[in-house]
Image: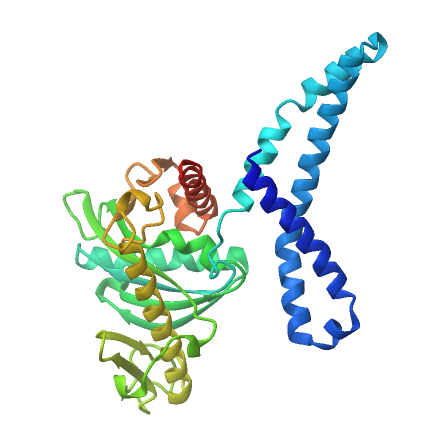
Length: 361
């Protein structure tokens, strides 16, 4: 293992010991905020330190076995050789796992996220596909135990969606979905197609991390134009009776967000502000990424929403993710929300790319 990595792991070991001492200190226990932060840090570091302990135990057992072989003890030599053979690959495996655990973490990974789906090229069929994608992510939310709340939805003809914005609340929502941003392409025969020809349509998906504290994003009230209007679409008796829907326009950037889900204008404005903060934060992140040389960008983490990332081919029953050359032939299950394995594969590929980049520096 590289010396700098060993030094980093030793520092984490010392930090864990320090935190353990602080957590039983009476003064720390009285300070709820500090106590909570220390507990969170402990929970993040403990798996790494435990893995490092396992690594040290394995390497020590190999060293001990080598000492026995060198000692010339014939009775124990065969046992020692067997021990070395069994443990030979473990240090490399554990070292790789430790490297992945030490990779920089996205602070938004543990939190909630906003999902935006917009119909693209393909007319009515694009709208129908947008509805299909929304159902796919809705089913995934059910599988993962997340809460899905629609912020804004615009229906299209033929029962599809022009666009939909929803908030997905739960643990690690952004981590699971962050590589879903981009152009999703569908190839299938539309129900209205009498000749049986395959049509290609597209939708754009964007995943935005929730901003924990809106105050962290500086939104000047003078930069906002607030419009209220009557909500449209399904929603019960209150719809179209009061101007409860809210549209916010951020004048400096031209970003427009709407919320017409709740009955209360105040609540809708609150949700719209939260969404606006997420969009402004994402704009900052995009700007930072653009300033990084393209060869340093991570394979699936460029966040380019104009990039075609995935194709859903219905006649062949397959899905292909173009970034990692992954093809699966279980399209029915995928459209029913069974996409966690795809998300995990993208995450793993991104981690390996980051690891390769760090090792080459």
